Length: 152
Image 1 (tube, rainbow, N blue to C red):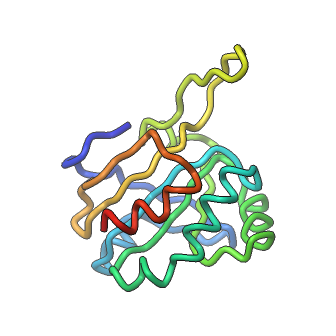
Image 2: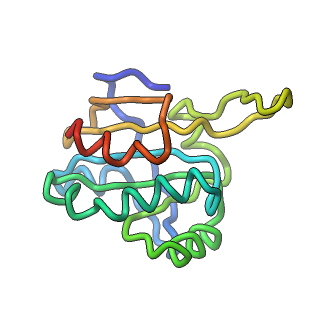
């Protein structure tokens, strides 16, 4: 996980519609960014987290904050995920793991004694100057959206 009070690494990735976006694009709009990394589209925890963010999106927008989710899933998978849950925010695809690794969320995970590499659910809040002002890698999927709203 990256440290707070450090500059958020730049990135450019495609969204669920195949349109590329950069972190700077959002920051130039004078907005804060909630950047959350999640393991897999359409899984139970990831769906609960995404639906929570989508249902609170107007509250985040009222606080000049944009929500962005990133996983290693494909653009097509993100599009299906968006449609399945009527998600209202940007999902970015990082199949090469470049951004995931840059943000230090690709880690060894253990599940039922099996060890594998995967995305550790992590949420960052980045201020309008591109500085990480909050970081959490102990995210509880269902609670994360409301907790981030309270922190803002």
